[in-house]
Image 1 (tube, rainbow, N blue to C red):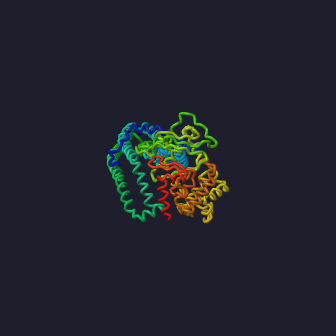
Image 2 (cartoon, rainbow, N blue to C red):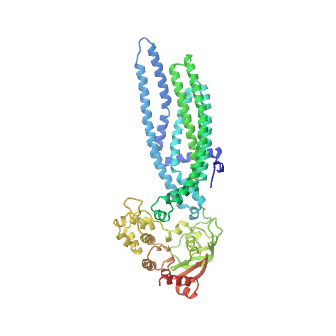
Image 3 (tube, helix red, strand yellow):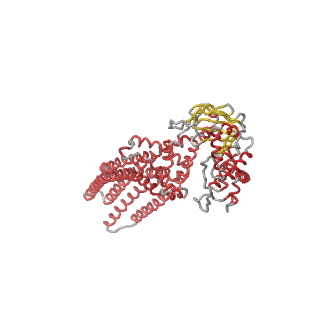
Length: 607
């Protein structure tokens, strides 16, 4: 775990400025989100950028005119009122344009935030399950996902920077015309602060990047410490102090690192600001001497002091904003690195999926270990799942049952060996089309806090509006019994997160989840412990229906209850990643091996 700033991998200036190459692409994305707002904002910025120098110039003319008329014997006010009118008009124009810029900034930010979030979600779909389960890759996803607000801030800062650069250019032109030496003094007052800001912005990014995993842990501790889902166990097991202590320890370490950086930044900032203030007043003294000596007029004095003061403020803001832009650009790099990531492209052109299974699936000497682990999960697994057959996977926890499903679904590739579909390696098929072949309900299915009909339609979301299909799926899974007890029926909001939401029992949720499998009407059905929360009678009835409703279809069942497992045509028994037995219920009982032992133990529990 990171302990100090010196432990962090430093992000040098070269890397910081290199990240700026992503800014043009970033603005192309913003413009695609809303061309109207983007173009309006840009035009408004260009117009508003010239109002400061024009206001100062009109102010100079007004003061000189006032002094001139005051010294004349018969003052005339026509020109004075004209200048006042100009100044008033510029003030109103600047305010209106500023409000337009703020409005379009906010609207563009909202639209881009939405679009970039959609891109991240869609990109996540293209990733492998193995990548999403890898902690290092997940950190990249987290960096891309967490910095949405930072990217919106980058947009506003960059647009403001464009305006400030134009303002600075016009003010510099005015100073060069009257007093070029002021530019040198200005540079002396600003550059050290800019260097200081750049130095510390790269340090902040280094800390944020290296602490991604720890910040995820902090978010997780916040979640389990204050959440209705975890509240029962947290209270029952007295975990509050444990969670608080763990959170406090990690949060304090992160705080200490940021505190050290903040203190040093404040000290250096104060030192360089002192240099800037002294430089500013040196310039101010020079302007006063020039005015007293008669070299410049009082109007010129007003113009120069105002220009210098505003220019210094704009430069300070611009340099400070530039450091924020460069820091945000580093996060922008993380975002585009994630968006640009491409999964491996098949070397051969994918084969079209068959309309129906002919011979079925065959595992041939399949070995597998999870990435980063040397412990084998599967060792030389070989068997044939025939087309139209219902096979059950049985074994103690950790035997490799769910891993077989993950390999069959191509969430992972075998370490060795191959899996065939009708004699062809399954990696020859387009993955998305191949996975459409399956209807699956996992033991850790998601309890979507949607309406009932949306929860069921998740199994085939394109059929969300087909209420007849949703009702039929609910009838098949026994979920219609659950729906009948809900006040809102199929439109009932589920979960306590949203208004008028109703939570369900574990068994009720499982019936809703089972309905999803029937919605897809897939060629191959897989049920991975989907009924563990049902009572024995409800589970038996659910599996009896499943067996009857999937006649002629290939199915895989994983269950620890042998009363349902025995319904399968054949039963595959796994032990320590190897196939120990394979046969019918009667054949395995006759073998007097692990299956018979487990069956007897479970049968005794019901006597």
